Amino acid sequence: MKLPMLRLFAEVTQGVRTSQGQSLRLPDGLLVPKRALHQKAVELDASHSNAHNNLAVSLRRDEVLSLQQGPATQRSLFQQAVELDPGNAVAHCNLGVVLGDHEVVRLQNGSLWDKRSLFVKSIELDPGWALAYNNLANLLAPQEWVRLADGCWDRRGLYLAALQLDESYGVAYNNLALTLGFREKVRCLDRVWDRRSLHRRALELCPRHICAYRDLALALQPGERMSLDGQDFGQRELLLEAIRLDSSFASAYKLLARTLSPEEHVQEQNKTQLLVKALELDPHDAPGCAELGLHLGSGHCQLQGWPSPEAWFCELEGLGKGSGNWSGAQLMQRALQLAPSCPEVLLAASAGGGPLDPCLLRAAALGNAVACRRLALALAPGGRVRVPFEEQVRLCSRRQLLLRACEEMGAECLVELALELEPNERICIQGSLWDARALLRQALQLQPNSTAAAELQRRALAPFAEACPLLMRLGPRG
Image (cartoon, rainbow, N blue to C red; front, side, top):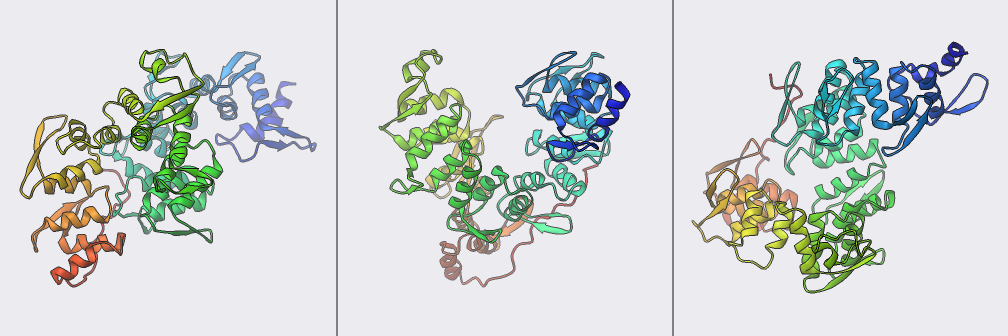
């Protein structure tokens, strides 16, 4: 019985990568759920690594499945797949996906593995497995490198490698876009891409990728629009589409609220209601908590599913849940308790304070672009301010702060930085040299009605070709 049954399951278990669809039609015409076939294969042959991996893929993260061998979870099945076949690259990658950021798993042979080591091992076992490159890149900090067999790689190089291996990998396009500044471009697959075009390509390949809608909305300037599948989208429409696809997408509600003035409504919800909805969906979002607190000021709001402020601040969060009535000041206090070193929280807490507000200085030290710009504009020409960076306190000039800010900010910040430069002076931004004219031209591209046009006319600067973008090439740093 065992061998004939296993032959029936061969079509779904022979490949390491499972095919699309939830069911399989057997030779006799019977339509059988793939999950049932994977489960039967595991029960008939407990040494089948691919069957364990494929069964795990069909489970939810918190699901417990009863097998003949005993209860099994997604994580335990991936772990068994790795133990049964140490050369199974996909099982290594999948086990890394389900591990927590700081978790370590011990295999039967006593070896210890965390997420990064599992993804690295997956690449070593199968250098053509695009998902492993993408997943490893997701773990790296912006300036971090990882050593593989063929050299050292950063996040951008790993995403480029994933796309070189699978040019239809929509998630990798979106992730690659997140490594670019708003003026940067990158060469990939014989094309030059900017952030917007990468997010757009991700949506062409994955029309239900809610994060790509959100990220494209963030990449657009206010008032800017883009055509997607024959429809015209601005920031607001992109965020509404993300919410339509997933009504529990908290960050989309928060970003949608930022597109509204206090008097505006969208889908019968105002700014306050959208911020409240976002926080109810993600109660531990410290920046969202601070943003709602700043928006409310001295006002109050009802938060469904929250404890009362008294229960929270007395460390009795489990008591009194249902509907908490919170003031703006209480929400700000909670945000600072949740994330005392979060730049966005510190920036919100500094609102109304002076240029030497400790929260503002700390936010600038942590690299928050808005904080750097606010601090720079508060300085007199030639003035300096002591900024408490982690390694040491440093004196920063107006130009240094604007330079840090313009990595993230829009047209206004570029104009302000241009005004700091002498006529023939150049500065380096993201690997390219820029003079005042190039900065003003870039500001005009980002926002045609900006003050850059008037400044160009005042300086009698003729338009000229854009600064050459910094192009990246695929390949490790050896």
